[in-house]
Length: 112
Image 1 (cartoon, rainbow, N blue to C red):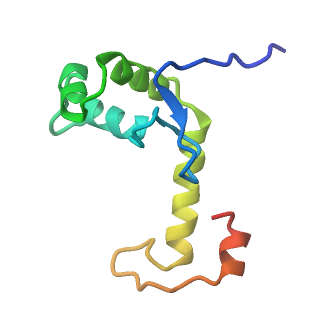
Image 2: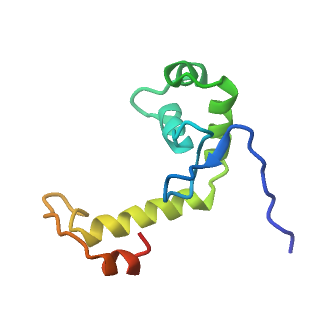
C-alpha cells in the first residue's frame, strides 16, 4: 500500500483564523471551494480569468483552487459534515426550523 501524495500549494493554505480545514487563498480568507463553486455554477459559470479579476487574485491562484477542489480533498467533506451537525444541533437543518442556542458543553461534544 502506498503513502498518500501530499501536494504543496503555492497560493493555498489552511486559514489560521478559521475552524475550517479546507484550504483558502493565502492571506485572503477566500475559500478555494468558493472560487470552485463560481467556476462550476450551473446558472452562471465563470471563467478562471473572470474569477481572478473579480477577486483581484492571480489567475494561477484560481487555477490552483480549482485543481485542489477537483482532487476531492476529504477536508471539504469534513467541513460540510461539521456544518450539517451544527445546523441540526441548533434546529436549523429543516425549512421552518427554530433556532435553539447551544451550551459550550454541547459545542464541545460536536467538535464545533
